[in-house]
Length: 399
Image (cartoon, rainbow, N blue to C red; front, top):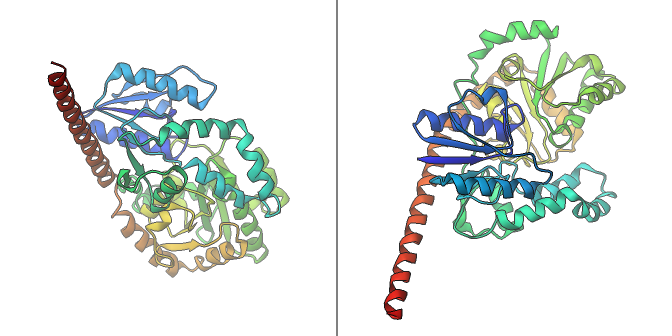
């Protein structure tokens, strides 16, 4: 099958969508599919992959990228066009960031209640919001394309904010590479990395992997660390990801937790950090289906996240970790983290986390996506046949 994948940046260092797309492309290649990637940037890690590269020129707007992608795709003529949320010309639409309209609504919870009405009126006037609205008008059209939702929450957002018919939506949670992310990695990386961080075995290491610090709850984690350190808890927070971390380092210092928090920045391989960690925390305000949470679960880590994370739909509260009701609840986050200082609790939840991840492997994920591809091809074939019949009938009438 000739498959075209559309994403702005084909670089696993950039985020969950990019990480998933790179892994997915590798699995398609392993199954002998011809993979074309349409993007404006390709990372160093993927340049050796035997894909067909279609590098788009730099564009200043998101609709500009979508237009350039469409023009390129028309020259490729693939069997299936699979868009990750950046364009509008496709057979399968899978916005890894979820619905931008839903995201905008939920981001209002990040500001004080008295600010929300004003922000709700001002945000739609911003250029970024106008661009996303222009994109959405063409991304969610009912032209036969199949819409892949990464969670039930995202499926509901498709219906509520974009009027997508139920019959067009396919629910497919993210899958994780359970060989790459595994408790077995601890023997390989844990001792060395904790030594590099200056942490002994008695320190409980909390990990978060993200680029969008505010949305994914890093400010709340820093405040939780202040409470924990005031209680003399043996704890250290490691934040992996982000580009401009200087301001965050200073913020941790102002809270008095500068020595208890390490900002790593972007890394090529997060596996050693999962291996060194004891707890994974992800108090997000919005996530379609957080891939990093699945990676943590696969690594046998208990997870603390929120109900606004699609990946939390797979979890059972108090079994693989904790699902918070409010991503802004400092007391709840602090108490959930404290309960995981008990090694027996961590071990029990970590074992349950690994069992859950094994039900959501990347290979199973690929199987599900290929089934959607086949469905799309079959539907297009039926529509083509129907159009051919109509044309022949019209030709007979005209004759």
